[in-house]
Length: 185
Image (cartoon, rainbow, N blue to C red; front, side, top):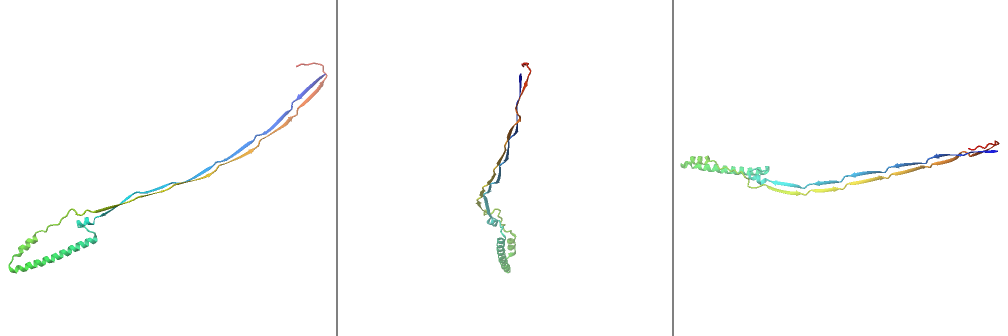
């Protein structure tokens, strides 16, 4: 008699879902606002003053008011001297009756040219004065303003899963056979 035993192994099955890690990254932001520094510099200045009234007066050049005063005074003197000279000549001509030959003397005096008053170089130098006006400097500091928005990280985890199930159950089959043959394999 013979027993035939067949064994069928069981099988397991699995279903897997991998875990999923989702990372959302929001970058940080930095905003800068810059105001530049300002330097203002004013240089030293020289204020120059030239008074040339005496200088020009030596050359007989005047400002309008002084011009009218000077030439009015000269005209007054010329008129006075002219009247005095005419009176003196009249007195001399009155002496003609005495028999004096005055015509030759008067002609000789009037024929001579008066000496010219020429002055090429002024006697007074111009008055020059100066004043140094100090410069100034000013400085305004610059500014830097920083606004920082921090970044954020958000993490979402979907968990994985694993299921194991029996796909096929193990079995044992036993049969009985009445053959009397021994078979060795």
